[in-house]
Amino acid sequence: MPRQMTWDAAAPAPVVLVAGKEEYLAQRAIQRIRSILAHEDPSLEISDIEADQYAPGTLIQLASPSLFGEPRLIRVSRVQATSDAFLEEALAYIAEPVPDTTLVLRHDGSSVRGKKLLDAVRKMHVEVPCLPITKDDARIAFARAEIQAEGRTVTQGALRALAGAFAKDLAELAAACKQLVQDTQGEISDETVREYYAGHVETTAFDVADAVVAGDAAAALVRLRHAIASGADPVPVVAAFAMRFRQLAKVSTNHGPEGQAAKALGMAPWQVRNARRDLQRYSDDRLGRAIALIAETDHAVKGAQRSPMHALERMVRILAS
Image (cartoon, rainbow, N blue to C red; front, side):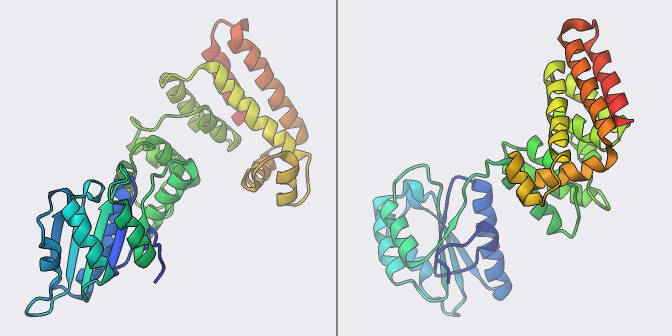
């Protein structure tokens, strides 16, 4: 058995350490272990221990074989605050675990208390790391997996909106994915997410630019007004458009293989791939006129016109048409 398992592949073992600060993933891992054991034998006996409130002798008493030989699951919480008594008995136990018993130790990483026990488990048994998901790509991958596990498809824009809306709470992100799966049919789209979570989804300038490049003027205008209402300043909005269209211009001049083009242009391969897809809507002349219009609008929102919003909406309508 591997020394480490991911939270979504956690499985029963004589001793399992669920370690890390992401409580939601930790609970999902522990629940998965419980579900597997209960499915294998519905007579599973489940016991819970708080390591900081431990009564000496409890662990071996709960692990001891019963009269009818039912399998046992012992879940130990707050190992980061373990008492000396639990630490001593747990160290002895993991050296010689009781058959048909799964011991799950939960340590949230908030202290070094119990380090000797953690090191011993990592050396002899199994660890399930549950670290916070902080990067956008990782949250997007998590949301995609949650939705696809239910047999549904979802657009990249919808995933990006979900990951941004619930960036601070993984449990909320998972709940949002579950609600969308339960309440909708077909592919989960960008607009589906905005409809359900308008109060959470903060539209960015790049969302507006994405709709413009896709040729969806109506969606672009809705997103623009949402972005402005959410506090976006017109100048950075135009700057986002300039960045997006400069990227298209750079890719339009490089016709080499995707990987080579990405390296030459200082971009990721997926950015080159997406830009080449978007460039199918643009001739060189149209792309040049778009960049000129963005420069004109940049001048307008910096004081050349009285109404920055009017200049922005005009730019969006023209570019998306």
